[in-house]
Length: 67
Length: 474
Image: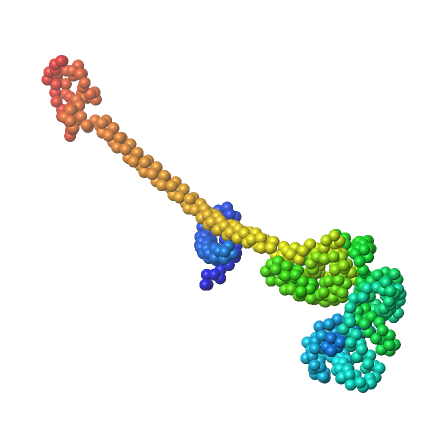
């Protein structure tokens, strides 16, 4: 359940910051860029998982309210 | 005996209420009086068993109640004594007679021949139109005011009350509980007058009407428990978790006024969302309580919206005009109360849809954001690799070009070598040819030499000197 502790909103906010960072660079410093990409990839993975969980939970709730 | 005891208790209770300046039910309710009369009360402990008697009431009225109850018991004994032909003191005798008179409670029709207010009561006399028979009557002002009848000499009235001998004076009178007008004509006239008066005050104004509360839960209901309308009303009230507080009130005729007013006052102190007053249809006479000024004013002052569902033919009961909503039937009342709940069901459906769709949209947006972010990061990083690939391709091209250049040069050099070899003077010598020269001059023709000349013959590995012997031109 530890995975559930990630907050999707926070993760997406961090991801947004990384995207902004990339967009602000005229020329990407490949070393820094690599660190950012690693972090971004981790966030994307986590966010997708969490979103998947939320979606599943939501589908359950949807079934309940639509009964 | 129980019946006469109730009447005695009532007489005392009414007088007490009058003295305290409060409605009679504030002293003791009719049901409580009935309970007292039916129980065998001997002492204060017995009083405590009566459900309507609080400790407070017992401390306030207990002594008097006991007096009356035990007095009535002694009258019963005295009745026995009377039958035994024993003499009774005046007071006890009058108590005994009043006890008997109480059973003659009735409605008396007559014409008002005199009326005067004295203190907190009104004394009036009614006469029989046919033979001038006269009856003195008495009514407390509070009760008189409740009647909504403007007493005038000459008018015909029906007085409801209990015959009684007033002990201090020994006078016989009818203790009136209520007075009502007689005949549709008089009732209609009073109705029209009151309607005009209240209309002028703006009591029926549409802008005064309050909307029914949304999702009402606590409903105050005033009607008679024996009437048919209560079932119509309750059966049509949806199952929306209503909490109904019911006040059983008389609804027929003038006598209903005091019950109705008590009921409205009772609900004023209760926490309810709306008040419902219902009864079935009837004539102007049977509905007259609903045209009572005092009752209408109570309804106007009511803190929450009031629904009045009173069946009627021609003249709309004034309470209906004053109420916030007046459906024509109890069923329609119930439907009006259900309305917001029923709408809530469809509202919930809409909200459910909005919630699901809204959240689905949110989820899609987040998904899309993640996808886009991933694309952006990938593209930026890939840009770098792309640049790198371009540089590498450039270098590869250079290397290729250098390779080309080298091999071309190589070829050129070989060409040169080949050309050089072709021009090498040694080359014919190798093939066996020789170069003949005379001095410095190369011998090409026979004419270049004459016999005896010494010529040099150059061969591959050296030079041969020879003399020309002869020559022959071809």
